[in-house]
Amino acid sequence: MDRPLLSTLDLAKAYQVGDNLVRALAGVSVDVQRGEFVAVMGPSGSGKSTFMNLIGCLDRPSAGEYRLDGQPVSALDADALAAARNRHIGFVFQSFNLLARTSALENVELPLVYAGVASRERRARAADMLARVGLAGRAGHLPQQLSGGQQQRVAIARAIATEPAVILADEPTGNLDTARSREIMALLVTLNRTQGITIVMVTHEADMAQYAQRIVQFVDGLVASDRSNPRRD
Image 1 (cartoon, rainbow, N blue to C red):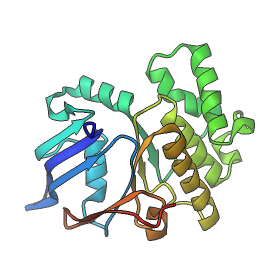
Image 2: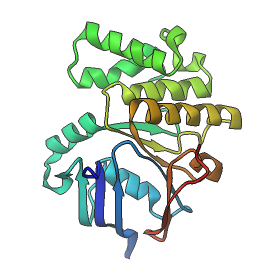
Image 3: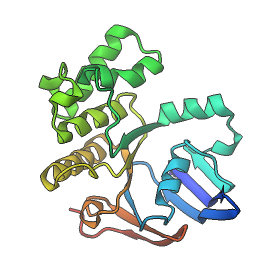
Image 4: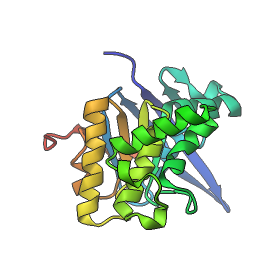
């Protein structure tokens, strides 16, 4: 098997809260292979969000090792860490995080601006990404002119604009009704199956986790179970 795209070994994270040391992660070893769709579940305080922040290079561990596409992340300085994050990772959040006064097309263009892509190319690429998520006719719409499901589609288009190896999705259906949630999950499954994009998704909803190939359950900062999902088609 090829080397894992994401690999953690005894990953730990502790925070000082007043006089107390809170151990958010207590030694987590998880490998994610290229092309997998993994759901991360667990109750509040289980460490799943901390795990997502660490593998997204948004925070650094207190102990243990994290390798992104074979590269030890701990060896990277701040600039190299940001470059690795921008090159490898696309983020999708529960709250969409779209700029309110910016069109759908311009929202999708943003990571390409930061990546230094020329204006004509980034506009064409952003339009293509919107088409991939079924919003070719909504490029000029502002976020408030779109439904919640459409806004999340724009966010997904933005996440894949730089053609990242992995999408990290943090409760991507948390602000959507059941029908729109199923549409977003079906879109993520399609991106995973047809384009080979690796997806790691944090969710507290068991029915949404069933769209993943594999479910990792966190409890008290540790992996309580890590199993394939036979219910996925």
